[in-house]
Image (cartoon, rainbow, N blue to C red; front, side, top):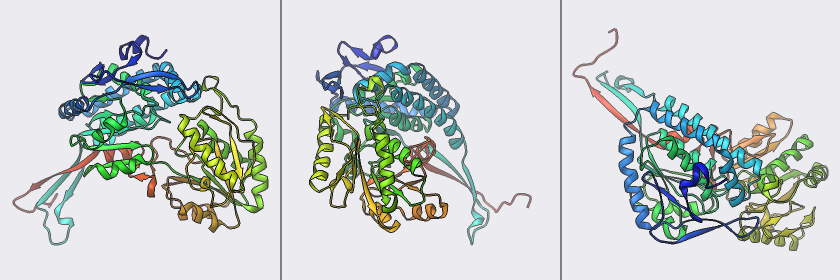
Length: 496
């Protein structure tokens, strides 16, 4: 059970503590932030409302701890990461329970997220040892006009303090995807979890604490974004920010200053379906891609662009599968669970109302009970409808009928987002050509968009983000190059 047994140290009465300098602490503010259970719509957890002064102390401590950590051998860093991964996987049940209660993630998916996170940490430890254990050796005479009088040694060194800000939908996995690369690269790490997902993150951080990482190297501060958000992201002690979320990231990028940024800010992932596509395969992937975790995924299918000649057949197949989706609480492993908040549900409903007013075909009756929205396929959606462009982050999927491939590509590229997209066709040549024309960070061929496996590069263009994620890319992004040049008095050539 969350907050008990091994995790009792992180809970004080009804409120969870924050983590700083190797200890679990109560905030001096005396204030708490409530976390609403999306299913019951009642307060389920409370976390500390940290102050700016406490954030200051955390970052100063992190700067000191990082200097010592940078001198820690790579094998030792990897050893501690493997230990944290093992503890995380061993105690997956209470962490998964937190995910169920604070973000309404289906129970089986919650367990999967925790196990996947442990695997990510271990893979990152191994990859970091390989990447950071190598450098480059350059000689000067490879450039015209130079003799071999200079030897250049290059290596990767840490940036300093990395600020990690994960989103609510995968708070554990997308936290460790930032934490593990930062630590193996020799950085210290300050985690600011989302409010919905904070308790899961605190449990995860305790696994790193139990693994024996040095005091001050890892911190986790909770609180309201309005009070400590800007203070964190604009703090002069922060050397790098890795953020996953919505358009808040745009504001962060404008304020952060001259530091490396890794941003993934959502998408409107298009699914282009050609006449020759395997429609059963397409329907299965639309269900998986559009309705998993109630559509609350950055890489969810968010608009289907299907050729008119096969649209009726595809819609029929998708509707049959939608009818089989179970709707209910996450504890029962329902396919469709409540969306994260009432404001999210209201936003989704606004898109639905707009589509109805403008003549979209409702393949199912729109139904809502609190934060729980039944799955809905909208056919005959037109470009003048909000749902054609905006990201619902819910179980509502628009279908736009197209008469040419070019029309589908145009709609995809007209979006201000560019995270992922997918193409369904049996003609690999067409798939490659269409994929190359799509302005997205990733194109999936004959499969729904997805983040992962976690070592694959993951990036967006346009308003979908800055930089690239994936284990290898994240390690590289959280380091910088340092060169040492040896100057010789005379040219020197091996075997010369």
